[in-house]
Structure formats: C-alpha cells, structure tokens
Amino acid sequence: MIEEIRKNIYRCEVPLPKSPLKWINNYVVVGDQRTLVVDTAFNNPDCFDAFMANMETLKVDLSKTDVVITHLHADHSGLIAELYARGATIYGPELDIEVFTRHMGSDAYYDRFLHFMTMFGMSNPTIAFFEKHPARRYTTSPEFEFTPVKEGDIFDLGEYQFQVISVPGHTPSMINLYDEKHKVYLSADHVLDTITPNISYWGPEYPVILETYFKSLMKIITIPVEVMLPAHRNVIEDHPRRIIELLDHHRFRLMEVEEILQQADREMTVLEVTQKMKWRIRAKSWEEFPDPQKAFATGEAMVHLEYLAAKDRIDLRIDDNGVYYFSRRDNRVSQDYPVVIRA
Ligand SMILES: [Zn+2]
Image 1 (tube, rainbow, N blue to C red):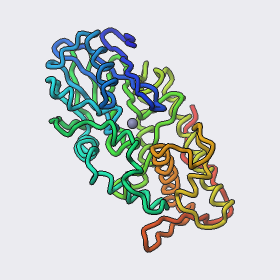
Image 2 (cartoon, protein in one colour; image 1 turned 180 degrees about the vertical axis):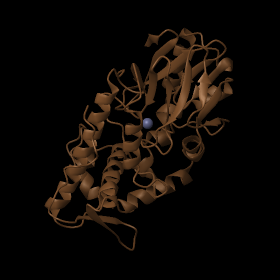
Image 3 (tube, helix red, strand yellow; image 1 turned 60 degrees about the vertical axis):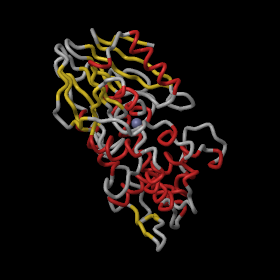
Image 4 (cartoon, rainbow, N blue to C red; image 1 turned 30 degrees about the vertical axis):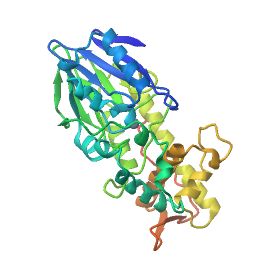
C-alpha cells in the first residue's frame, strides 16, 4: 500500500509478520537530486520483497538514495545491510545504530538484557528467553557503513528540508524529522496513534528514561505540525491531543504501579509488579505471554518503578544477587505526575 501524503511524500506500508504492530510505515521523499527513505523493515524475505516492491513502484534508484534509520529496533533497521549492499547511503543516530543495531545478532549482546531479567526477579534466565525476540530474529547483518546524524542536521530535498530532531525515550537516541516550511513531522515511534510506544529499560547509563521520554514529548508539543507521520498505524492530525493522551496513559500507569505496591504491603520484584498490571494482550495468564511480550512488559514496569523511586514515592532495595525490590513508602497514591498541560 502506497499513499501520497503531500506532493512527492509517500507513505509505504510493509507488513510485519507475526508482530502485534501489524505493519511499518516507511516514508519516501522524492527530491531534486536524491531520494530520502525513512526506516526499513525486519530482515526477513517477506519484508524485503514488500519493501523492494514499494521502491520499484516509486522508481527509487537506491544508488541515489539516503536511507535514514530513526532508531535501533529491528522493524526499522532490519534491512540496512541489504540496502547498503545495493548502493544506498545509510544515516542514523550513532548510539542506536553503532552501539545496539550492529551487535544485535551476537550472543554477547544479550548479556546486558539477561542481567536486566535477573534484576527484575526472573530466576536463571538464559539466552533461550530471547530466541523469539524480533531483535534476535530479524536484525540486520553488521555488514554496513553509516553516517551518524544529530539534532539540527538537515536533509535537503529541494522543496523539502527535513531537520533532525532528537527525541530520546523509546530508545536511547531516537530521532524524528521535521520540515518546518510544510509543517510535516515524521514521528517514528515517538508519538503513535491508537497504540502506546513501548518505553523500556536500557540500563543505568540511561537513568529514568521515562522522564526523558516525557521531556521529548513536551519538546515537540508546541511545534507547528499540519500532519504527523508515525512509523506504525494511522497518520496523526492533532498531535498535542495525542501527546496529552500518552502522558495521561503513563500517569495512570504510575498510579496503577503505586497502588499495586500499596495493596501488597510488602517488597515486590519488577516481575511480580508486572504480573499484577493490566495488559492489552490475548493471554489468559502471565505464563501464556510470549517471551518477547514478557520482556517488553517487564521493561515497561521497570521504567515506571524506576521513575517512582527517583521521585521518592517508593523505596528500592537491591539484594546481594542484584535483584531489585520495590516497596511503598506511605499510604498515599500520588495523583500529580507527570505534569500535564491541558490545552
Ligand atoms: Zn521502535
């Protein structure tokens, strides 16, 4: 499916098999000299064929194409090496692409995440836990070169000038692209409609990343936007409204987590809190959650717990094995975070 959003700006769908995300939106901007392609898809044959079919329909010459990856996730970066091999020039945020994407295929990459699962209270996790994870199954081969981009860099397409905007949160260094003149904003997985971007734990190097995400939302809420183009699901017409909904979602999540600790009235691991939270997934019990969903859910619970601990709302104790235990501090559930600006 290809839709022309504005003259020479196209939204191209690529189905993501077996993923609850259903499909990814790639954006193609046809310029005077070069073409800009934003994000790719999983590194698997079906995604590759669908992606290339869209490129053929739009007569994209990969040797005159700049491919920008907004963040590390395999549904965005999976085809980098394939496109690099066909002559495309690859761009992306350095931390996400070099530190994470290039190493996602190796076993050593998972030591960090196995450590997190232990920290969350899972007993003796092994690499088998990540076997079905999209990062492991559908990542790119490391055979590519890329040029790092940062806040303020411009992709000059002639009529369109897309500026890089740094919006860490969903990943440690995700970027968006914005054309000020036409008020077109490519929001990647920073702002999505109907689904909420997963905010997960990336380690102590990226402390209180939920707060980082809130700041990145507030950074763009007042930017003039006529059309916001996300990487999944529908085009967003009213982005301030959607940002307020996302902030509200996390406010309710923070309250939910705090209430779980209040009711338990004892120390709980991240895993125990996760199991008590409500999840929109077709599974009768926690045991039925697919492993990748368990990883996403515990990561999401962790960032809410980490935020509450950072705000001195709850207590954290770390035992000798590195397992995190959270507990309530008093009998009050806060109603006042994050700060939400109502239009
Ligand atoms: Zn993502």
